[in-house]
Image 1 (cartoon, rainbow, N blue to C red):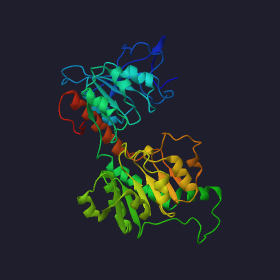
Image 2 (image 1 turned 180 degrees about the vertical axis):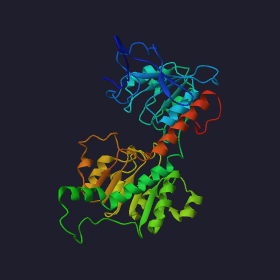
Image 3 (image 1 turned 45 degrees about the vertical axis):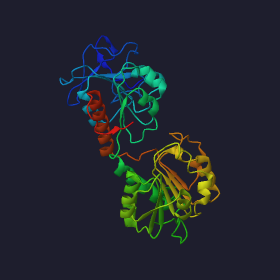
Length: 391
């Protein structure tokens, strides 16, 4: 069964209806207007109350906007927050994969065919196959993410397709989550909670559940960009003694404000009590945190990654944690995502893993969806995007 809502009629079999999304984003059924051909009977449009499990079909929404001179065809690869959906009401003909789960490849290829615009997520691999399926009509791709390693950039550039993305908006939320993950990992919070639940808490013990504090520590940040700087600003009041940072090049202004020192990656590993990874995923950073890197770190150091999973060699990380090369690790990103429940990292008490929730606040996700929608709309009109990736 699917998550398509259906409208029941006495004496009439259920059949799918198209949704009309008016300029204010409100939805209503268009009587006797079937959805795209070939969809199974009984499939509805939204996964609301009474709906079945996540869908296997497209929800077609007609967006009425008098300002649109030509009916622009747009495909959205997932459910997005309501404010973003309302913004899309200014487009023309919008199809959406109406599920919280990733769209199957076959449906993505079918859905993108002949579209002018594509709004996607970081979990959608937009490669040559997808671009070929879209055809020459595709002019704009808008990704609801700050990262764009899921996009075949060179192929997109070759075809003259414009790309919008959502930087800055998620900086604060991701920085907050990074600090929370660091504290949870270094002070062994998940492990402590579990001890309370399973009866391991018997009395106060001087050495029980001891961890590592930030006061008078050295913090190394790999990638002192927007998020890296926001993390450092939040950690400074904890009494951090020194900030080190590594990256492609020095950032003098940020370094002066934070009193941070630009150092080689090896020195950062050797001297930091806490190593925080907030860099972009590039060919240079892929697999950068490996056995050699972890062996350089202090045995009392804590490793945190909120960038991309493939920056870390997870097998090497597991060995470092098991063999005591480092004290603990906290990850908000993994390879793959979701991480299989039998992955050996999940068996370790000194490894805290979160399900990629760095930007997961209601306000942030809504703002990201609005920016992604506005990027798409501006691109389709040939206007300047609020946030365009310069290819």
